[in-house]
Image (cartoon, rainbow, N blue to C red):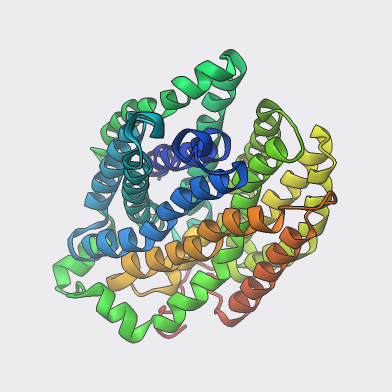
Length: 428
């Protein structure tokens, strides 16, 4: 289990490094380089628009790779998704700017971001099922939380490189070539991930399905026919997690640098410190999920998010690093209270024959609802006025309340404490 968890964690970290480094670049530099004819606000919105394209592609990736995972195994998904995301990310580092290529430059950027999202849409389902379907029932949340640490590590790597570059280079050099370095580095990281995953075994549950001839012929059709309500509920439930995370990691970064005049180095350091703490506490919170259940932690995380959004915005608006860090940390702790157990919760909600498709589609639809729209909506709501952007806080609170209602309609899936298996997902 340790080897499987480590391979899932490293691969997920690499995939999310690719995805996050684009978000940071969109907040800091892509607007003026690829949309120079726009106003500063419009350029930022356009850059966040290409950022959103990755989220729109993720459900399509979950359908494509989910079909592969349910028909041919979880293992092939891990290789194909990592290879696709890695190649697309490296290519971003070579795209000429608007000054060189004109309108074709942002078009290429948009296409490559779409391919990034397509690959990441398959990564999560494959990595999570690799651990969840190998893990003992009484420690499934713990072992499945290791892929959930991957996004924290990927974020720290992406922003650590960006922080070093912004601190060590002049603004002119960073805008000229420095922002491209993390995208080029993604190629080496992808090779490392592929090597680590080369010796992984297929999961026992898929082997059993394959041997018994019970694999789904058309997983998406079964999901739409038999599990559509579950997909919509899981997407709505998880939307708050994406909204909270990307309000901190993407919108707040742009707001702090452009509206509050805080240096990008300080903003990156505040966000990274909060993400580091979140990554450390993830497995410990997951242990609580194995003890008390998945649903109670998800409900608690949603409630905490709803209560914390106004204080978070107020602390951000102070532009004081310790207070901004406190605001970010509270938000991310509420986020990880939910997402530390999601990697066990979603697979348990779906029957094994369509699990790769169902869990991934629900998870990535939530990314569209919460992640793709949040930077755009928050940037629009925070424009104008000299006080704290309370409209952003109200929007995030509303998303949290909607997610709270969705979680309330989902069943508990915690296996019995004496070690007996969980109820069949269809029955639950």
